[in-house]
Image: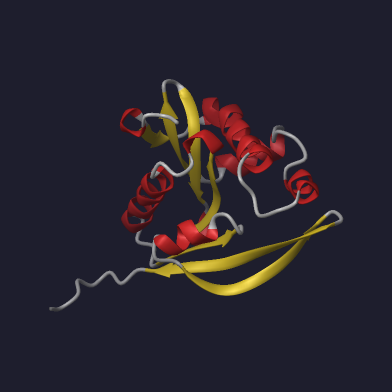
Length: 165
């Protein structure tokens, strides 16, 4: 288990894209999962790469967690407050890293004046997003290839006014 006190959270750049692909592949294919092996293979059949992958990442703000020069997690903010990616290497899961990455995304979204964040959360990510204050708006079943996946559309609304007490 990594020492989380030595983990740095920073913005990703294009030099990090290969490492981000490794984290995603590692998290989906090797981490704890509520999905079957067949579903995991359909979801991430191979490590992401190529021009479509680069273009998708280039269009987002991505925060990464780095421990001893290894990317151990990442989360991204796409247009209109959509959290597109949220992955943690299995070796770093359960260390509070999800919270640290989410807090950096929330700070960024508030600085950009967003009033809502939303996500399509996997069965594994749903409890973590719930712990960050997200509410389930819809349970969904999506198809990837021959496989069906349950997931949750979730959102968190921000009240930009200070509460009166």
